[in-house]
Image (cartoon, rainbow, N blue to C red; front, side):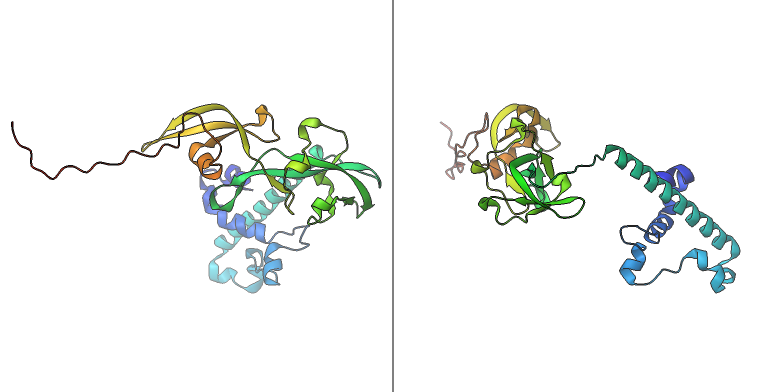
Length: 261
């Protein structure tokens, strides 16, 4: 939508942002079966396209009303084209997955590497646990699995996007006896090896970065992490060149006056 505004209005695209927001909030959405404005307020919004019907063309002037009508219609048209284009891209990448009862599938889990800023957890490449047997088909894209006791806190119905056909890939399978899977299908990984290190200088200080290999992940999936984050989150993990030696105590200067010999 923003790209369409920039291409259409060139250097004045930012002046049309309010109208673009207005057009988006008053466009019919299939998922809601109504416009976002109507879903929020329970009524349809009075749009510039209705000003002439209410006699407000005289108050605001014909040029302003006509210009607003043309811009809103153009933005609506751009929205429809963008939605159609995005749907075509999505359909090309989407592949239908169909399973049968008694089939065995892997369940996707998301390894995490601790909490970063603002309470957001850092994600690593997905892994899979299982296989588990399908016991029921709960609609065209959902299946019920026969889960073991250690997953009793997890709801047993999953979207097809969370499942993978049971074609064993050792690199992606996780030993469930060594991890604690949370109800939201995540588990926390931990660093096991430092592969490389680098330093980035800022105005105030130099920041050390380490390339970390995580548990149940290959070296190709290693991520770069700050030294401060690793020391805080994983204090027992040793980093090269980092020691736990206490800082030297500061010696206060002597109060006695200096004498000349």
